[in-house]
Image (cartoon, rainbow, N blue to C red; front, top):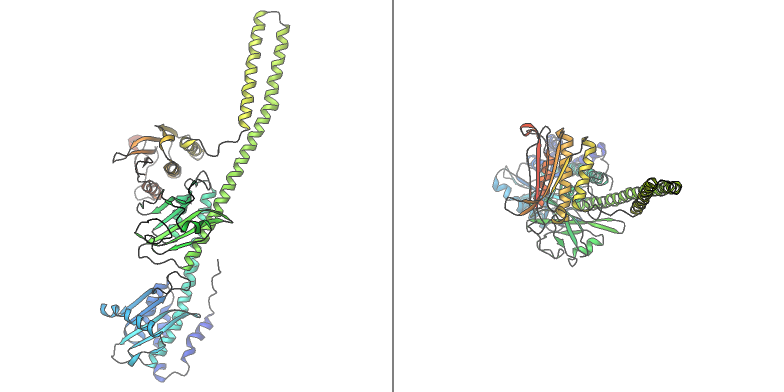
Length: 564
C-alpha cells in the first residue's frame, strides 16, 4: 500500500494561506480578523463531509451570502467519474435557499467555475484544490445586503478556499490512513482465524466455517449491505456462493454463477469486476436481487492460482466503490488467498506428521511385536514336541494357534497403518465427534453426544458445514462464559421446523451460569445468522442445572431439498 503523504510544514501552510493577501485594499485589510477567525474555525474533522460542511457555512458567513454549496467531483479513476458529483454540501437560511443550491452548482459546472463574480455579481464560484487537484467547487449567491459580490469578497473566498484545501487534504490523508488500517487489521484477523484451525476442516475445498468469517469481514470493511464468498463449483466451471453475510436473508446461499456468465472467466483470470446495477448488468449472466446496488467482485488469487472470489454490494442507490476501496478490497482478497494456501500447507504438514508416525508404529509392530510373537510360537512348538502329556500338548497347540491368529491380526493392523488416511472425516458424524472430543481439552471433561436419525445421509454438505461451525461456536461459548460441569450435545436429523419442514436440529445444553441479562451476545448472534442464512433459526433457553440453571442453545436448519 502507498505510504501516507507527509503533513505540510506549518510555515509553508501559513505562507500559502497569506500569499494572496499582499497588496489588498483597505476594505479587505479591515476584514482580515474575520478571515483569520474563519480560517481558525475550519480545522479538521472526522471525515471530509464534516469539514466541507464547516467550509460552506464559514464561507457564507464571511461574505454575507444567504446560500452556498460545495460540489465534490469524483476522484480520477473512480467508476462514477463523469457521472455527476460525488458529494454535495449546502447551506441556506431557508429551505428554498438550500433547494436553489443545485442551480448554483450547475451554473458553475457550465461556466467552468471562474474565480470571479458572475453576471452582475449575482454569484461567486471558486475552485477548491488539494495540491494540484481540483476536487470541488464552492459557490455562493444572494448577498444579505442585496448588493453584488465584490472583488474583496472574491479575495476573501479565495484565501479561505486555499485553507479549505489544506484542511481537506489533512482529512483525506487521515481518512485514507484509517481506512488502510481497518483493512489491514481485517486481513490479519481473517488470517489468524484461518490458520488457527477455527475456520474449518479444509482450507480450500470446503473451508468449513471460513467462508462465513471472510464474508462478514469483507462486508464490514467495505461498509456494504452484503458480503459474499464464492468458491469454484465442482465440475461446473462456475462459482458457487459458499457464504453470505447480510442483516436479512438474501436467498443467495448455494446459488451458482454459471461458467457462461462473462464475469466468471474474468474472475478466474485474476481480474476484478465492478458492477453498478447487479439486476441489469450482463456480466453476471443471471438475475440478481434488485435490492442491491453498486457491487464489487475481486478474485482470491495467489500466484497463478485462483481459489475463488469475494463479492460485496451496497444498497440500491448507494455510493459507488472508489478506486481506493477497490484496491484495498483486491489486496484483502489476495491476503485471504495467501492465508488459505498457508492453511492448506499447514494441514498438509500435519497430515505428513501423522503419516510418518503411523509408519513408525507399523515398523515397530513388525520389527518388535511380530518377531517376538513368532519367537514365542516357535518355543511353544518345541515344548509341544518334548511333552509326553496329551493334555499339555493340546493346550500348547491351542496357544500356538492363538499366537498365529494374533500375528495375522497385527500384520493386518500394520497394513492398515501403512495406508493413507481419508482426506476428510467419514461424514458429518465424524466431524461432530471430532469437535466434541477437541472441546474436552479446554473444558476439562468430555461432553456427552447423541445422534438421532440418519445424520450422514440426510444432512447436505453446506448445512453440515454450518452445523459444525455452529457447534464449535456453542462449545466455545460454553467454555469461555458458562463455567459448566456438564454439557450435552444432540444432533437430530428427524426434527421439524415450526412450519413442518424436515430439519436437522443441534442442541448444546449446559449447567453453567446462564446468559447474563444485558451481557454481550455476539456468539448467539453469529449462531442466529448462520441458521437464518439457511432458512432456519436459533434460540436459547433453560439449561441442564437445577431449576433450569445454565443454557440450552438450539440451532436448526431445513434439510437439503426441503427449502434450504
